[in-house]
Length: 188
Image 1 (cartoon, rainbow, N blue to C red):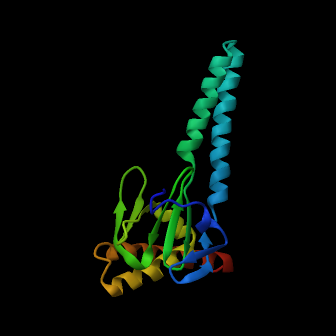
Image 2: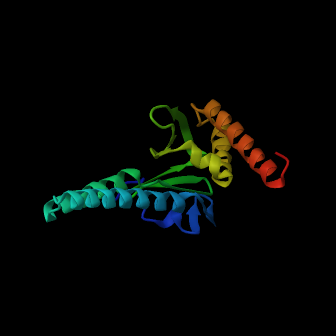
């Protein structure tokens, strides 16, 4: 029996069920590029380690297995989260497991500072999603889905914490989108 926030792969498909019935899902457009970058990093590390070992004459099956394990660990650590959104839901899926929140039932949104900034979303049903805010900046459609649900949660009075963080993120998304439009039209 799975937990409430486990995702079996369904919401990342083109059609997904939201809280308001079937609807078109919006996915992170940069995810594939980030995945290939992760594969390249792990592959380059593996190739360099094997080449150095072979050049020094120290390569053995045990050491080669160790280097493969190290490259595999790097792949797991760097594996990008796949973020998708639909009608009143936002989901983030890692290599093994995914999480999902109902955006119309959000109770808190927090910006976590650290090595990398994270946005922590919690809903009234106990769902929790942690995403990189850059994903929302790069994909305005994801931001629009999140903003639509968060506005509904704020209007209903369930969003108790994080309205300011969402407003700041919204201004940043608007600014980056406007800059992209100006750059594409040559008005930069």
